[in-house]
Amino acid sequence: MPAPSISIITPSLNGGTYLPHTLNSILSQQGDFDLQWLVIDGGSTDQTIPLLKSTTDPRLQWISQSDTGQTSAINKGLAMAKGDIVAWLNCDDLYAPGALVTVAKAFEQNPAAQWLVGRCNIIDTLGNRARQNVTKYKNRRLDSYTFKSLLRMNFISQPVVFWRKSFGSSIGQLDESLYWTMDYDLWLRMAQASPPLIINQTLASFRVHDSSKSRGGYRAQFVEGYRVACRYAGHDRLSRWLHRLNVEKIVWGYRALRAVGR
Image 1 (tube, one colour):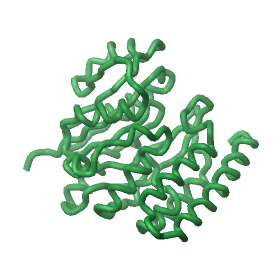
Image 2 (cartoon, rainbow, N blue to C red; image 1 turned 120 degrees about the vertical axis):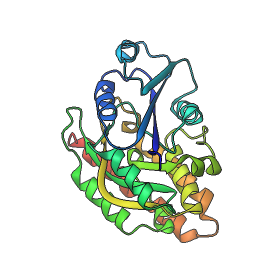
Image 3 (cartoon, rainbow, N blue to C red; image 1 turned 90 degrees about the vertical axis):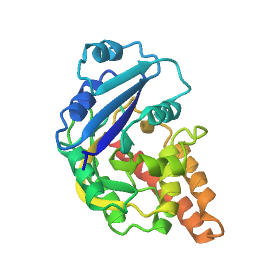
């Protein structure tokens, strides 16, 4: 049986501060799988392009051209992906050592699984663990996953989701009309079609920093998530109401964390 192939897409725009760490976390992955890393850059003017030009690893492929934003870049990368398994990792996030071989083995051992969700740490600008209570809360929600619970709150961390390319093709591309929650929309579409395989292993780290997209506009992004949930809630008014209540809890919770510098 041939080794599985994995394609990782990284959308990029002037993310050169953390991209070297992302690069190392991807290209250091080892195991019985083939790797394609696609960096889809939107025309960076920082140190991103020199870094990509100096990287001679043939597993890296990259383009740099203007686009309409992060979601467009990811869709472009997904269209270029050759792997049996696909995912995206933003240019400030990291894969844990051994993450990709864990993913490859999980899909091999679970042939009916169409998409996979692991555990995710949160790190700060220096790479230190942060917001560990948030991580524990998301893990508890993940342990009791149901489609209805996902409708009521998005507790799935984007960097630890992987799916079979054939499954993703049947689900459709990311919704480019969404600014923050194109991932949540994709999770709900996937979840409607097939339950995720949930594994109890940390696969990645999500970085919080002042210039990150998710750092600003807390209320706007969670309200957008509520509108996404309403697309799939149908006549389930309770789930709509609980999601809206969760928006308020999360917004005030993150504001409190930011107020104390976390």
